[in-house]
Image (cartoon, rainbow, N blue to C red):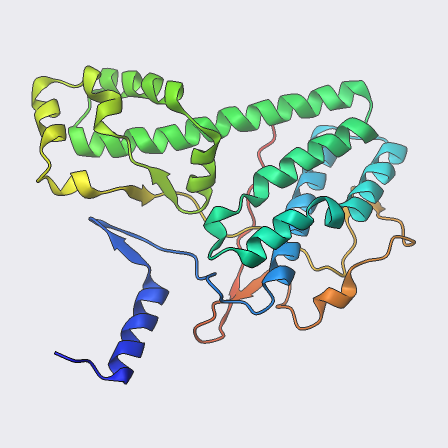
Length: 280
């Protein structure tokens, strides 16, 4: 049966707007594939939003003095664009944002800046903050994966603890990136089979079971904080020096701060601010 062009167009738009159905759960895909003609602008706004979020965290966690705060905010303002040009280009060229890890790149660069601008005691405090973030992220992702495994295999409390330990041995930082983009890796049967009972192993080996074709499950949110290119970085009561030129020319025609176009009907959607994790 041949479908009319109008019907085919409707179906394409419907699936683009409502995501891809994976087994029993629906995974919403970010509507970012070629959605924004100003992809480079959007990437820069996300980068600046993440940097500002890190500066806010530094203010709370490290409490830099006035001189250190000014030095750090000026360094961020003057270096963010050349230091992250490859990241912006990667997003501009990518099919979708899932292949680009904004958070890790900004986090690593901020650690370098902090090491150059703050004193040794405050650098140590920030290092502890990053360690605490890593622990929190691992706990969050693995916790979700254990819950998924419990739903599939009916794990006991003891087994859930054992599965947690097994997943910690296999944990990768890339799992957090997946979680932030709305998915979590499947807790594979082969990873945890040794702690399962005979009946649970039979369930895991049953390739006809509908749960076995589920590759991903719902994870975290997908949006990143955003900051206009014309707004200066701030750290406490300090703003970047006015002599540092902003990239305001690139802001022409870009979506408003905190919004993005979905590329289907032009509706502007609000961005969700990522909660900061403070280790102290």
